[in-house]
Length: 207
Image (tube, rainbow, N blue to C red):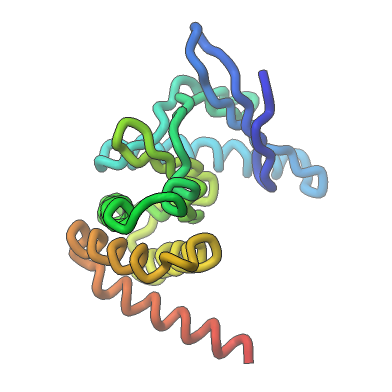
């Protein structure tokens, strides 16, 4: 078992299960929290993330298949998506490919929001291309909500991620992401309007 990533909330390990490559997501214990409270929070987050992954897949959004949930250890064992991160793919693709990828990203986010799923960390690092499909991974900060404010925040975070990681192609990425989002989600216009309001609030707070 090899650790491939450590974040603030969890460690990711690459391992084998029945000869298949798998990812084991292990939620980190927080020593500053009371043990019983920490256990409750980690258990809740593990259960929620597994629900989000399953619901997203049912909504037509490719996600890693959950193979096992260890409720005692607060671990999720899931399929390893061995593909290319959208983060690298976008920065090395031609304009036509960038447009196609961005359009599909928008459609997939529209599917998530249509069923009330907030990803919580929409970055191109959490999207992987495999066999012409874009998989969404790491729903660790996600939750269920149909509130326009929460959906607007989700999209705002994506815009910030695109601006910081893909600034040279930001306009093409965002324009096509919005196009795909509008195709898939009936409340897209309300959400995008809220994105602009959130941007204005953020600028006001910086003054």
